[in-house]
Length: 442
Ligand code: AMP
Ligand code: GLY
Image 1 (cartoon, helix red, strand yellow):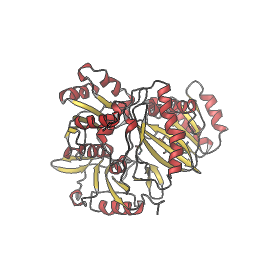
Image 2 (cartoon, helix red, strand yellow):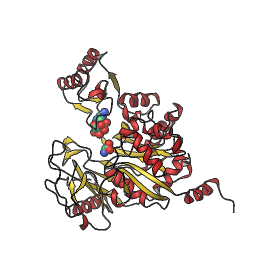
Image 3 (spheres, protein in one colour):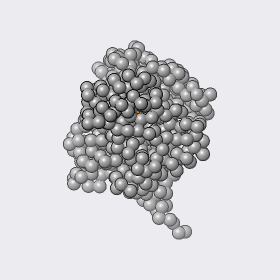
Image 4 (cartoon, protein in one colour):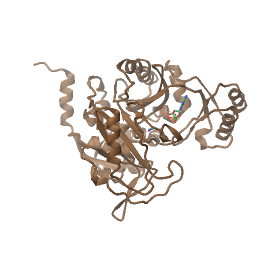
């Protein structure tokens, strides 16, 4: 029997086992660690710094994700073969380039783009001009800074409402303001540029057209040439039911997205995914990792709202549970530029995740409340820690978003109902969650 290079290579990958280090401490990293742990190719798993959830899956190393020299030393000490970077911050600050240039780390694989590639998330102005250069559909925009500030004010005065203002740099998810009147827009613009409301992130501001429609997210794994599209998801960003109130990091997510028909997914692939990967290639931008594309779908037409250079949180908590393929095998294929022959196997069931948050979040909230009931979940429900810690042997709240529960179902409604009834097992003072995750998909 003549075997294809692909099948020989797959067989080779099956024989490689390695130590893996996952960077980050949230629900996303817990979900990635949970999935990684299932791979027969994963020998030892380390999480930096991890959380009480990841502790059960591997070894947590108490280092900061921004302490590059210590991460480099941990990679050497623990003979790490592959680093998977969860959050954007280290990527935007060049962790991938730093680790890849360390001679003692040899052929260490880093999943996460170069500093230049991470600019897709690290600079809104970079992302917008990239999209324009490559004909990728997105909202019309202009960029302004202290030098053309007055022109910016005039531009705002003449702009149709609502107006979207975006701080150029990373602003911990708070850098986007949607103004519904001109005075508010000008005030925000002034605060960003003249009063450094978002620090240096707001020294440059992107002003863009408001897009109508419904949002969804697409996750792409790329080796810089080829790509795979992972299960899509939709997240729920507002604190209140019916998508009301303040923005949060995400209160829940569902996958699949029922309106993402094969025809729409094909359009997204042709009009957005392919030109994005080709654009990175044409501009010689090194990119090996995830591209999370936030989309607005307006009457079946997709527009890019934003790129992220990593997976989403809480989207990962539904995407990883639906991924049937071996995650580490996919990441190894990414590392050696062999994604072309790979397929993404997906669990056909629907998944929903519901996030329990501290009372008061996303504004100020208290921490340190004991969490009970985590051991009472059904075996087929998944618990992902987001903001918890151990104190005197007790699990306590430590963040705004505390923990996510993911469940499956035949439909989004059933999955969400299951996630909600499993969440009811867990108690802590001030616990709040949305009871309407997936509400648009009866
Ligand atoms: P971002 O921080 O880029 O994810 O933006 C936060 C949220 O603001 C997005 O998820 C959208 O809900 C909204 N948003 C951003 N840009 C636009 C736009 N051009 N039109 C409408 N809504 C937007
Ligand atoms: N859930 C949105 C994000 O991870 O950026």
